Length: 194
Image: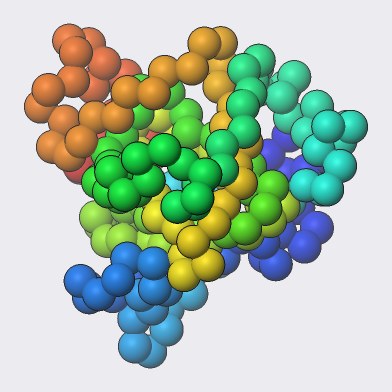
């Protein structure tokens, strides 16, 4: 399933190493010179991604296949922008706090765009830009954060296996419930940050 629906994926998902600037988090934050990352590198980190048709998602057989194959039984849609998200400033701040989840984080961009920042095996930040049509799966236990870009808007489908678990565990994860950190780290390709 991970190798299907790849045509044109690089047009809706792009990744690069980030600079260390504390400027506006919504800026691209490219290093100088720019260091783009091939999408296979994201796969090596355990990140799965696809390009789908967001204009027909209700009837999209490819989305249906992914959901069935991966057990994504729960779905909702969230508009993230100042006009539509209650407590916008607080939520954006929380989304940008480095954290992990004990389950996968699955997001499908139906409109707009945003950035998922993830850590590589050397603990360096990689910025993953996701545009309309891009679907991304971050593995359980992967430190990450999310922010909008300067367009200030994303309409995203959120998918879960079973009932949604919204609990973020901010870094460091010393406060994880007993037994969870081992499983989350086991799901990772490396264990240096666990």
